[in-house]
Image 1 (cartoon, helix red, strand yellow):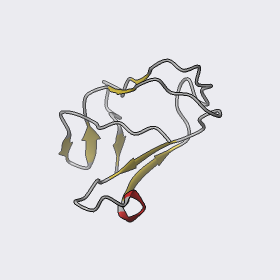
Image 2 (image 1 turned 45 degrees about the horizontal axis):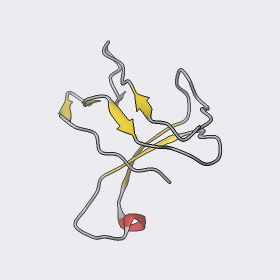
Image 3 (image 1 turned 90 degrees about the vertical axis):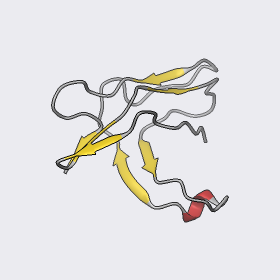
Image 4 (image 1 turned 60 degrees about the horizontal axis):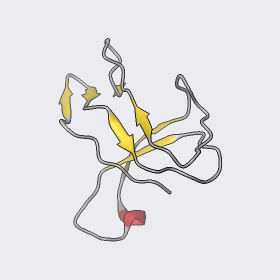
Length: 83
């Protein structure tokens, strides 16, 4: 599992946005989804609430090769997601 933080987060009128996100040195099996969690003070990530599950996006699924994977969030109206 690779973990990265979304920087410059905003939420306006049900639209979530943030800076593009980089996962460093990703290896392992094919990635078919992006899960977004709200990290909390607990060190146990299994306790973090799920915010979004994204399994349909340009470039998905992706096969890691040990390099970085950059998630470029939509800069149009959809952003990361909208409610």
